[in-house]
Length: 341
Image 1 (tube, rainbow, N blue to C red):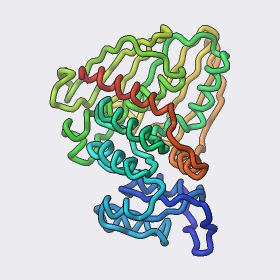
Image 2 (image 1 turned 30 degrees about the horizontal axis):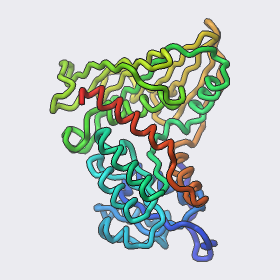
Image 3 (image 1 turned 180 degrees about the vertical axis):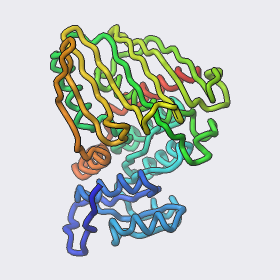
Image 4 (image 1 turned 45 degrees about the vertical axis):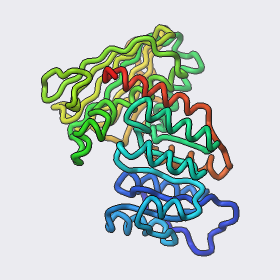
């Protein structure tokens, strides 16, 4: 990502919503950068337990106050808040903000379970405030192109989808490995993106069947085990007849830092998203006709902060509750079913 020119004191302020940033580690700061660059809102306040992280974030918006707690952040007359904290905190922090009339942009997952996600969405509905979750792979140019192909009918009837997210590394923070805090392992961390892409691309048909197998250190584990999985496969059958197959992992000996793919098979053709040479950021999109391949999208593509910037633009347009948030409950429900909850 390129450098950012901080907002100046002479920036136009009239009508710009005030936004606070809760958690400005690598991902939180990256999303903050995208929002600052959008120049649609006023960065008002920052909080992070790490003084170093808070200081780095202040370089993006020197006029934003650095405060010591979520309560202090919510007292800063905010219109919106960006939440990038551990998963166990997402639902409660989102509800606290929404109950104060503050719009929310939250890192995934919105909650550790369907019930947590549904509670946040109910709070957004009750407050009539904008809510969005950082399901960022929707915003890659590659997936946008593939979805347009499918919606236009150019692939015919899509009947099968294969989705993969293998990560040669595991998370570095201990809370990821505590299921009570994280909600699960690689499925809720990485697979949530795959489930969302499957359902979003096909316009959220009903889910009629979910089957899954979970592994930890190469051994099968019960779906309701207290252990977190580091490898998982799931089959998701949709009311449209589509069969989706999802596979994801941490620390897999896959030969690359990451393998990320989404393959859509239709009666008149196929389309595939692929990461390039193990990259987490660079993707291609191809259209397939039999053995022929047509390249549709290739890097570079600065997509990482697009979801955050889109939320900021909608906030500036004074949008309220979005009924499409109900789809977030569907994604959370599939996660629960994979975990046997």
